[in-house]
Image 1: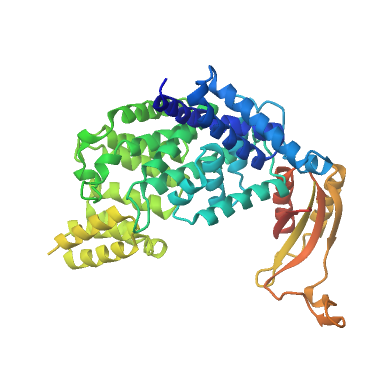
Image 2 (image 1 turned 45 degrees about the vertical axis):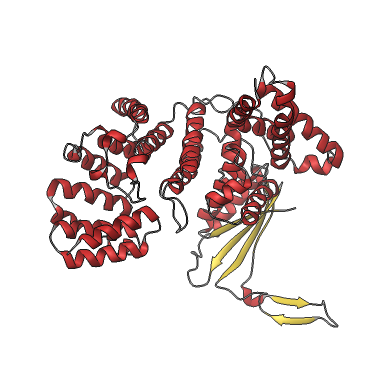
Length: 413
Length: 107
């Protein structure tokens, strides 16, 4: 095996084993700091040794053993295993997780701890990317356009709170599980959206590293909670959006709207996988399981990705799904997206009336003005449309979207 | 693990004043289940006095150490195995007191 191959093996081992190593060390030593540091040291040791000594037959076991040894060394060095330290240990529950289809896996404990509702959302995101996904501090800081020191502090503070307030290292009880899973999914969807709709003047319109990481983590949760419909729904949703990634931004860095996308450039494999998951959830819904919002959003995306072109889209199906979604989540943003389907079925005038009703809640949201601008354009109300595009451009943060909205505005004569 | 559980009231939007019977019943339960260490409602912040004796002589001032719309209306000290247990009880306490609750661990 040459050095390049060894490097690939190490990269793969990092992807596959990082969370497992951190999770099992956290359980053993009751301390996220020790687990994180020892895991990082074990991977650094692998980088040093494997090219010369060869890759061990079971890289995961080697990494865990090495990390364990590093952790014990550190504890001995700091002579921390006195009573005080033991008291400061995290609380964990040795019982296997509740019988909800979950397999007993320390990684699940790690995820629930990192996404604990007592932590601020931004801390949950940072901690999950560091402890579960294994991204480095500079990588996370870059992804969220924050200074490295600020990101480091955010993670340190979160870890300190986990310890001081005794946030447990445990899979929640069956009764609390749905709410806690939905908290985890919110973190993952936020990471995905930050990659998909990256904001900021100097950033790429789509940050692939974040969408990829969000999908990878959601796959992991799916592996750990295979029975959870919303997990399957979120994974399907991400896959169906990711499948259109390359078609969604032009070579010139401009957003390409759904009706203008080259559907041949969509990723057929991701779509097939997404559709498979949606079908699985449809079957569950037919058997009586009430679908949650991610499942419905995934189903809407499945309708879009099943159509050969915009005209071929089954808009009545889209609208029916939005109606279902509105009952679950009466947020104005859902109502705005529903209006887009209304425009296709009942015409732009009816849709515009529905959109205008959302003004008090959405006046500061760029997509509200962009949707209005498009509807006004279709109604031949050029001057008003241009004004709406102006407001949308002023509020939008994504570079590709700004370029698209600007061109649309300038096309109006 | 001990937690200080603070009941926070808001002068501009105070919680209802008929909560005492429900709070007493909740306290009985906390005692029976082994979480209760201490509890007490507090007099109005007007009754507070702040003492600063870090300088030459003690300075007394009338009123709370910080004037704000929100103030501490009462406290509990709970013994709970971890934050999840404390938060679950605190969620109940907030309903029962009709007020916001802060949960803070002791060192």
